[in-house]
Amino acid sequence: MSRLAQRIENFNRAFELYITMRDNYVKDKKNDSNKLALTQSFEIVFELGWKILKDYLFTKDIQVYTPRDAIKSAFQANILPQAQIWIDMAADRNASSHEYNMDKIDMMLERISGIYYRELCDFCEKIKDYDEE
Image (tube, rainbow, N blue to C red):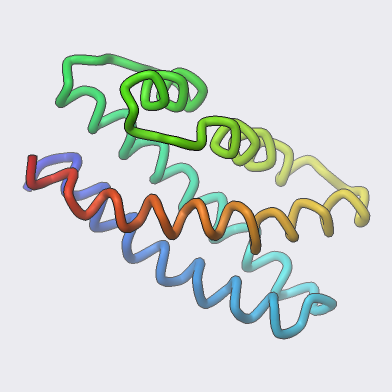
């Protein structure tokens, strides 16, 4: 199994957990456990997502080393149509471990459960074809 295939498999497992944590959060947004679980599952899915982009770009002879480079290169190669959302996801991923202002955390959780969720659903569909190329 290729590295890309392994990452996709890991992403799919993590994504299922992210869906569950997102659904739990949407049902009860005041529950601190739901907030933490959604944040952690998002962090894992984002990390696997950008690494899938990195590995996929490598199959196209494009080498990248950071999330920002992977996002920019994937956008330029017409692999990612929504680069700004991915840049925003990266920023929120980086901030999620260091933010203590509850209003900012709640705004971040709304993006994680809304905009980012929809983008990651689209990404999950798109990567089904990646390992077959």
